[in-house]
Structures are given as C-alpha cells and as structure tokens.
Length: 317
Ligand SMILES: C[S@@+](CC[C@H](N)C(=O)[O-])C[C@H]1O[C@@H](n2cnc3c(N)ncnc32)[C@H](O)[C@@H]1O
Image 1 (cartoon, rainbow, N blue to C red):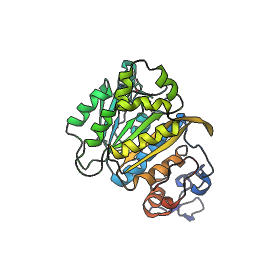
Image 2: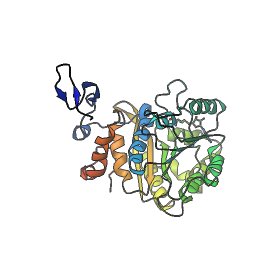
Image 3: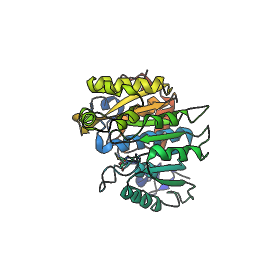
Image 4: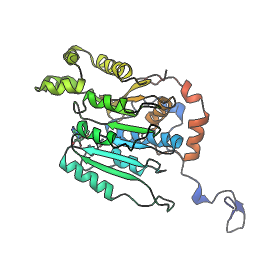
C-alpha cells in the first residue's frame, strides 16, 4: 500500500523521502501581497499557463486558441505561451489552434507541434489535436470558428498577444459572439501601454488604427491618459462584447518594477475565473502547486475572493 514503504531499519514510513515534494520557494498567499509587480514581460506567458492549469482542474477539458502564437523572443522559448500551455500537466486541453503571420514563426510552430510527446507522464496515450494556421489571425479566425469543432459547452480560451494594433476589433466581436449559450470564449487580450502614444503617432496608415479600434473615434485615444484608454477599452469589452467580467492586469517592464508595458485584459463569463486569475497573477513566477493542494485552495476556500487587491490589481467585484 502507498505510504507503507520500509526503511533499511525496517520502520514503516508514511512517505518515502523521494516522494516528499521540495519546499515551495514561493511565499504563502498573505506575504505575496507585498509584491507590487509580480508579472513582467518575461513571465506573462507563465501567467496564462498558470491560469489555464487552474481552469482545467475545473473543466477537465478545453480548447486553446492562440492568434499571435509565435515566440516573442526567437531564442528564449521558456517564456513562450503556446509551448508552456502545451507542456502543462495534466494535459487536459485537447484542442489547440495556433496562428501566426510570419513564415519563420510558423516554422517554429510546426517544430513545436512535431516535438509534442505521444504519451503523458504516466504513459497514457494523449488524444490532442494541434493545428497550425499560417496567416493573418483576423482572417484565420473564421476557419477556426467555422470548422464546427468548438461546441457550446467546450471551455475555450483565446490568447491575443499582439504587439500593438494587429488584432482587429471585429475579430474580438467574432470570438465573443461565437457561442450562443453558456460561457463565451474567454479572451486574454494584450493592450500595449508603454509605447502606445508613440505608436499612435507613428502609425501613418490610419485604416490600421480604425480596424484595431473598430470605431471612428479612435482619434480620441491620442488625447487620453493611459488609464483612460485602459478603462475605455475595458468598458467597451464589457458593454459591446457582453462579457460579465473584464479586468486589466498590469504587466511590468522588468522584475519588480519599471513601467507598465501591457495590460492583459481578461474577459470572461465564468464566475470562478476572476479568482483563478488573481491566484495565477500572484503566483506566475512560482512553480505550479501540486494538484491536490490546488484543488483545496481553488475549490474549497472562499478566502481568495475576500482578499483585498494588491496595489495595481483590479478588484474582483
Ligand atoms: C508578441 S508576439 C507573440 C508572443 C507569444 N504569444 C509568446 O508567448 O511568446 C506577436 C506575434 O504575432 C505575429 N503576428 C503579427 N501580426 C499578426 C497577424 N495579423 N496575424 C497573426 N500573427 C501575427 C508575429 O509574427 C509574432 O510572432
């Protein structure tokens, strides 16, 4: 029986020393509040991976769409969202749709696809479908949604990690409108912050801005503060796209500081999702917690919901 291993001295042990997990190097939740900027550009992919790891413990299935999926840095792939999500255990997300417009990036996506194991860590055959879409996500999104493979009940998540203006508003509309019942496709939408004024001024093709913003009043963005732009977009996603919860999570320039480079705007209808995202945000740099520990923390504690927001964090209400 598990837990009845014998030592050399023949004393029964509850656990063999090899089975005892190493101590968690991350601080407990309460102390983690003192971290003001726990997620920075190098670990934004870990934020997504942590969140999805928590979510699939609830759903036990899922579809992951990554519209701008090639690695941010061509050499540093340990902070590549698609790679981290594919590697995350348990491998319960079964459908992956990975899109990129750059030929070189598409090559990296095919390499990632080819390098996937056929079996999980316990030797069970993995039943996963990974599809790569070379092209503009604003176009390819129709193929993904019209293929009929995403059912109304399928928990579906879409990462939109654009650099600045690549993801058109109509693409968000299509994703948000896809499901007729149940929870809408969740969005993780990256809004550039640190260089948005410069990018707005430098973009000479104003049609790009109009398509990105989806309305003719994009010109107002130039005179807004950064906080105003963030708040206007959050409100539009809530009102125009109809998500119940829309929260902007700041992504900093570097570890423990610098300016806010992006906001990761998380749009969801699922009542548990904001709580999961808060936990993922606070623990993005930490190793994933053991599954049993997580189940207790995620599904039996009301405590997380009551915790007040850290500086810069959106509130859960
Ligand atoms: C910020 S990177 C994505 C980073 C990635 N999510 C990661 O975790 O490392 C943006 C990617 O979007 C791609 N891209 C730019 N415009 C695109 C478009 N219209 N459709 C699809 N991909 C696009 C770029 O080639 C680049 O690989």
